[in-house]
Amino acid sequence: MAGTVIGLLIPAVLQGGFVAVGVNPYWRFVTVGAVLVLAVYLDQLRRRRRSRS
Image (cartoon, rainbow, N blue to C red):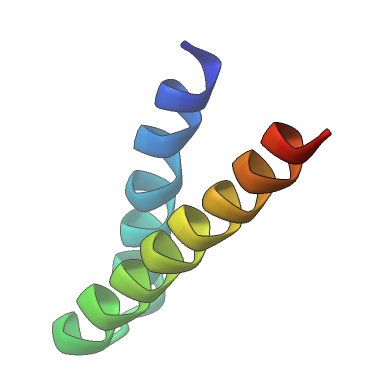
């Protein structure tokens, strides 16, 4: 449950911050997408390590 809430907050906070700073919308979406892909990748690594133990 906490992971879901954090997963929702990260893109929202990034988008809000980028809007406040005035980042081009294209780069906002690219950056948020990259952060989400990185988060999924790190989660998969964490799950693999946990399953091996």
